[in-house]
Length: 332
Image (cartoon, rainbow, N blue to C red; front, side, top):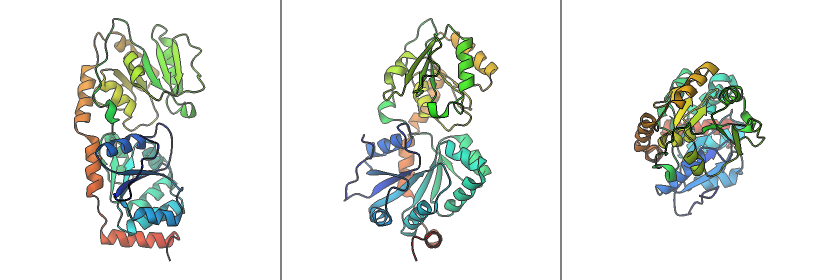
């Protein structure tokens, strides 16, 4: 799929508005899955469209899916308000850090509540995100993270008598958030276990003899084939696709958040106990694979498509949106 899916003029498109463009952003997978179901999709980075261009795009828009992490500036808020005022529903899609920002920043929280008065629905990718949003006064429904359609039914990993490598996602821009200290301690405490580090382009752990630092990887299939466990000890999380894809293949997972088929661990002691347990495993993670198969079979892509297709905007919501657009300077 291209970075920005094309939109045919004769089709009403789903517009994905995203506020944190990156190669690993979850909107890529969502756009690909929706296109595979036959929907026309357009990805619009926040703030890139002029007002006239935005209004023209709205004429062919079926709905907007919004993925945004920070507080809204007046321009983006006015763009979204005008869309709703014209009858285009906005679905806010919550994936992890966006929820964390809402519950830890008064400014982001107030901004989210302001927009929430005109959205047609909120969708969160993990049950614990529903609870966190609820504590902030935002009601959402749960739809699991959408998997890449090409990886929905992978073969189960082969197994050996020695521990297969442990896979760690550790982006260089957010090492502390992804548990750098805990990961390094686990590497040092388990010299006989090989660790494969992904996304760290600075290769900060490559000096350890049991570390293979790959940097950024665009095709994960070969890496999944080699590994047997995922270690992910983030400060906060949603429902990461890498974790789902790996466990779907029968890999074990040591994870800082509750998820069926995974071992929950946050402290160095809990991580070490989980790694020692992993060493004793003589076959793939059947329990985890079954849990991920159940999530896959629930067809999150189809659930999202139904939510988007059925979304509407009431007259009262259109009126609120028009008033918000006027206050933020888009109309009047």
